Image (spheres, rainbow, N blue to C red):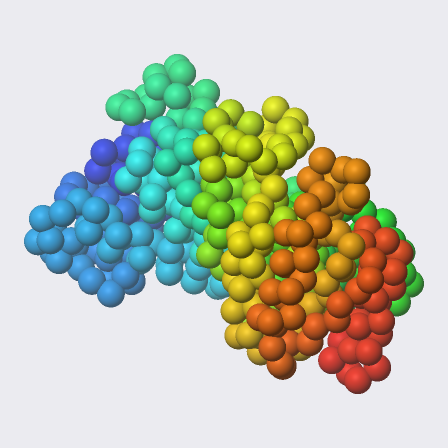
Length: 411
């Protein structure tokens, strides 16, 4: 079946490049809907969605954007309208994916459009700042695809055609190949890290499948947590087992390895039952290329690989993480149950292991008892998070919810 791709860009400055992308998509059998998000100039031929329609969708006008006298204000008007129109076009079944071109201005707008589309809808951004550290993690939709717009600042040439043609084929191919998620069984959403430090998913997956659930485990290293939160907020899970909160401890501690301010809020906002544990929330991560900040210089350090390394949090820092947990869970519209394993919350948090700090762990346990308040339930467990006893406790909570109808194991 022919697929339709939304092509977004400033046609006043990138007319030739945007038409090249459209031509490549159409040459491969796809269809195109064009959206002009420029402010000052006009395209060589009318776009399917004009700049005036985009501005109006954003609750403003091109005149207001120009009269603002500020390019950032103007582009935010266009970004609001473009994102709303993108979402509406997909909801109406008019598009199967999107591709956007831009420098910093166009990329800023494109990120909003990508976030307006659900996971599973192909979204491709060709950008002069792809993969740049100036793009904060919270601006990235979980399944966004990016490619560097090499040599593409001004005009078509052989180098930028390589990027544009790849992106055109990629977004159309993705739209043709994608298998949209279809729920045949209710889904349990689970967070974890690699099994070297968190192993409970190995103990839980088969019992959950036997109970009639499908299981999706998200790698909680930033983008994984963003995907988990997005799906939880959309109500895609029957229940969640959110047992890896290192993204939250990173956020509280100021690390760049986090998944945004909304971590630990999606399930609660949707009323999805959630079982929560502070797995790996005793650590703060740093990118492998970073120098360790001086305040962590005298603490145990685990260099996991060349991409990521972790330092131990102090007792006071762990208390702050627990308080952030409790504040988020207090807003939940559905049942929430915290499990606190008092013998350790990741594999290196055992006696004899390099990240073991019993006094800091005791402070975390103490703060958990103080901060977590009804209606959030709290169960202290005399075990380690990787023990069978922890998995058994999680299943008991879930079984209780199945018994009272809060969670349904069959669709």
